[in-house]
Image 1 (cartoon, helix red, strand yellow):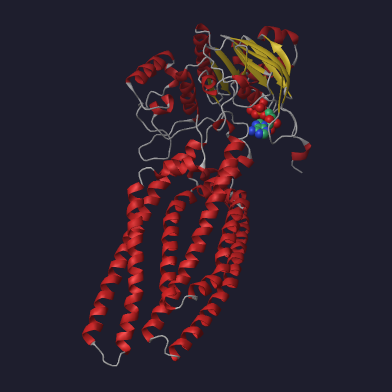
Image 2 (cartoon, protein in one colour):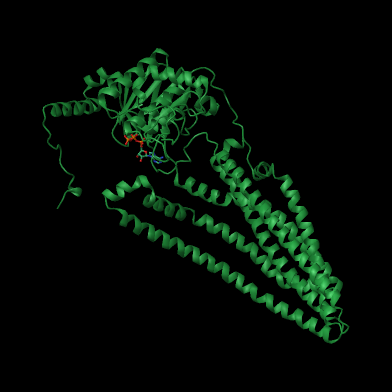
Length: 606
Ligand SMILES: Nc1ncnc2c1ncn2[C@@H]1O[C@H](COP(=O)(O)OP(=O)(O)OP(=O)(O)O)[C@@H](O)[C@H]1O
């Protein structure tokens, strides 16, 4: 059980950086001391310079000290920047880790929505401000102590000077906080736009997309689209920058006015001989420093505010998408024994983004060891039903029972442990063949299991590729597999998990009919032998004959259910689907290659 909030993230990110923080704090204290001493030296230097009895030895001494002080300050400043950089790099790695850890799934219902992608993109772009926060805090503390130091120096000369400086810097300070809010909402509002722009950019430059761009000569089309989005995005950004610029400009005008008031006061005191030239220059320097310190405090405060907004957003994000990371489910029942029975009662399901149910009033009973085929036309709900059955989508309580327990009450990990799937969009990992199958670091045990698997299903593993070979096109030395070979690897991955329930969602669509028949045969036979349940979704009608039961879906509802024999005799949907393939086979055998059917009028060439 993970409990995530900003505090725990900061604590984890900070672990290991305590020494760096201590050194940074020490450097800050030394830098503040040298800054204060520089003011004092400035006064002495100019007073010695304007003194009628010029003491050149003293002046040279002061120049040397000031030079050494400046050099020390520069070195320490550089060292401080290096430490901050180092800390940021280390913290960003830990933040990346935390961000990945944050995605703590139970089901994927809410994740397969554009809103999630927008929200996640926004979170990701602001998440890394957390590493800045820690640096910001150190700098913030540094600036506050500097502010106090310069104020004390100025009070010693003229007590009310820090008050005047603070007063004319205050609007700028408050403005910076407003700007931080503006930055935050800008990132939120442009989340979708930035994703769209990135997606189009990727389409244009991704090596694997180039063949389609070439064949369809679609580069100029996508370029135009990217150009439009990019112009739109630039407009937003320029507008945003303009707003910030206007806000800063407005308050920047106040600053020179305030500075002039101080200069008038100081010059009057010099004329009245209340201040020496050295003191005048020292005060002017201290005022300028105090002013820049106040501006820096404003900016750092703005950043702290931005991180505070990030923390709120983080909390909302977790509550919205991963509520289980916060609360222990009330009925967290472990699914200890293998799946014996799945019962579906009046199941209806709707995606968060659709306005109609895509699965309607389904009732089913699946017993362990059975092999079920799900067929139906495109969009009839086959994949949705399959994913519901393996627990990937949220269902209402009372609709789906596994071993007599409502799926909502079952401990998520114990459930997933018993499920596997090969989906139409399985992932092609650019890692070794062996890792692609075992999805773990190889060990003696995994090697033994892999050998057993390859003996049981030799047709799944390409002969010419060693298990150490990196697959794909991404890296030098890697080896690309054919579509069918990749599909075999995905099937091997699912079989390696060897779980009680396996869903094959058009998992053999890229295999040649002979290999498909042979693989499906051995998978079903072996799993039946082990009393494991297999569901498969297919458009290839001949392999349906291997199933114990066939479910025909139409518009999200069960149109027919039965064995191959029963459904053929019923001469309904299944019969028609089966005969279409059958007849086509006959046509093909006869060498008759005529295009069948008519072109829909709306698409017909005029
Ligand atoms: N993640 C999703 N969000 C919203 N709607 C979806 C999502 N996935 C599928 N749908 C919609 O649900 C309906 C059923 O889709 P599903 O993928 O289950 O059909 P299918 O029978 O498997 O189709 P096919 O044979 O083409 O793979 C479709 O109308 C589809 O538009």
